[in-house]
Structure formats: structure tokens, C-alpha cells
Image (cartoon, rainbow, N blue to C red):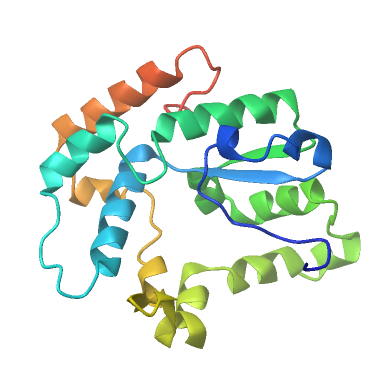
Length: 206
């Protein structure tokens, strides 16, 4: 077994995590992204990792309708968001809910809050020395994309390999505008807002 502390990255909804997690002392960080951008990103990722010889995918419009119906590899996106939001409100010291849009808008502020949440706050000297800014630079999309393992490495099994570069595309906020019609955008916004109504979470404001 690896030694503590350990970091695990999952795409599972909160209800799929081990029941013992709330009592384990584990810190959970959930990154929430605009569902429109999430759909476009997922679509591009699936296209990049499709097995060799697979020349076609579900038509874009059909895949979009399925996404709005809750069909995606890890379940309805609104269930993920509502579950982690609820836990972050109930247990703010153990569960942190981050918006991708806020991370892009104020990366240094979000990284500073994240460090404090994880019990490793930056010292005054580190802040004065620009350490938070350095962390942001090291974790930038361009920086991660340029790492040799991400640029040239592969992921998967012998029967299904794909390039690690598939994990890094644009990382931009609002890229959905180049792929979705205004009608599609209104549809998914309406579906998600209806599904998370009553949770206290809203994706329409700051």
C-alpha cells in the first residue's frame, strides 16, 4: 500500500464513493465546470481516445440530446454537482467545491484557498516570494501540455492505447460557443437549472 498522504483523482459522483469516507478525515476537492463546456470537452476527448479503426461516433446533435437526458460515462452531470455542493455546505472543512470558471478568473486566489483547505497554507514569506504565482505557472495548461510524458506518452492497455495528449486540449471558458447553437445552450442551461433547483447551487451567477 502507498504511504499517506495519497491523492486520488476520480470522476465518480459522491454517492459512489466509499461510505466510510466522511469519517476518514479525507479532504475532497470537487471541480465544477459549466455543463456546456463540459459536454464539448467530453466530446473532443472521446473522439481523441476512440479505438483504432473506429471511424464514426454518435452524431453531435444526438450525443448532445443524450447528455441532456443524463447519459454520460459517469452519470448525469447535475447529480455530480448537486451531491458535492450539498456535502461542501454540510462539511466545508472536508469538502471544497470549486468552480472552473473562478479558477480561470483568479487562479492565484483559488490556489491559495486550496492550499489552506488542504492544511498547507502559504507562509507570508512564500506569498511575498511569489510562490502561489509559481504554482499557478507550473500547473498551467501550456506547462502541463509541454511535459514530455503528456506530450509523447500513452495511456491505457495493450488492447486500447491512446496518447496522453488527449487529456489536454484548450481548457478555455466559453469554448462551447464555437460548437453549440444558442438553442442548444438554452436547452442544457434549462435542464441543469431545473435539476439542481432547491439545492442552493446556481450556475448562472458568480
